[in-house]
Figure 1 (cartoon, rainbow, N blue to C red):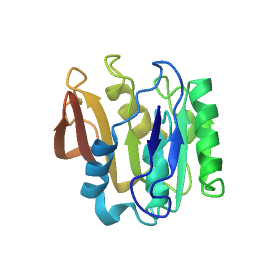
Figure 2 (figure 1 turned 180 degrees about the vertical axis):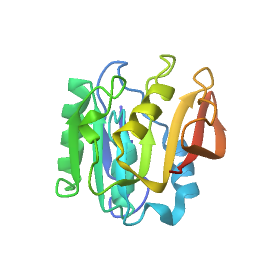
Figure 3 (figure 1 turned 120 degrees about the horizontal axis):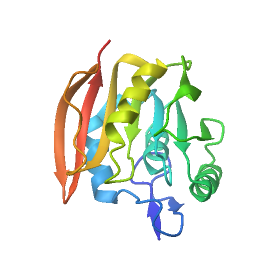
Length: 186
């Protein structure tokens, strides 16, 4: 299976996907809708792509003018495919891949500079990873005040109550997929 970049400098570029069922690439229509909602917030932003899989979110952001992207993925094969996608798109100067298990912690990002202004999070469905990942992200102190988060999740993996510093802004449904837009408020 292959995906393509929807818009920007890399429009139409094909992205490879990892074999098997370890990654679940976001449908192009869903990704396009998300980026239409984000609009100009993507330009010049520092992006974090958690549970990155193929890297489609981060690469799309780079194509649309993001300043940099850090991709975090635990699966070895997905990391290899992601690295090839970044090289093929000639974005190695703006992108970095880090093999890390975001479900355990995000200590690898502690006080990251510059702080991230845009975060994409697409954890595997049905494993209860949304709440812990949001908590790990907050404790890593790597996100700027006012940063936007896009969380793709299954209807059976709800977002936690707004007890943490994440303010819900919008929620959209695409089939059984929910996409929640949050703002990080210190």
